[in-house]
Length: 91
Image (cartoon, rainbow, N blue to C red; front, side, top):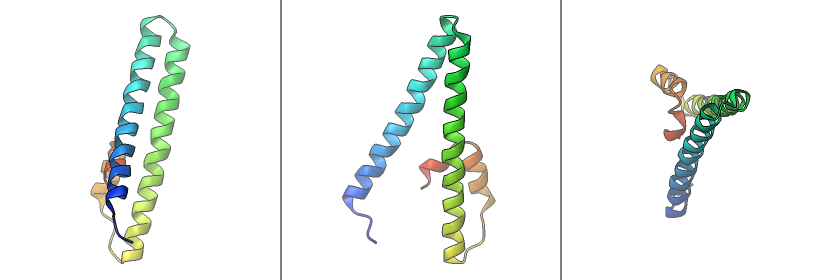
């Protein structure tokens, strides 16, 4: 399968949307805390962290499967990268 210009544009668009979503979630939670609505602030942060955790787990799982199919050994630096929430950018 070729990596076309459309695939590249969709990858860039996906990264932009992902980062924008994280920024907006952080902004909303800060606003909640600033206004004294601590329950909503904690809920927003919790949902944001849960969502990013699930995305990173799936990304690392797919990465391990790709390595297994190609016959390569697992690289521990990618596990660290996923733990630091940067794995999405390597896919």
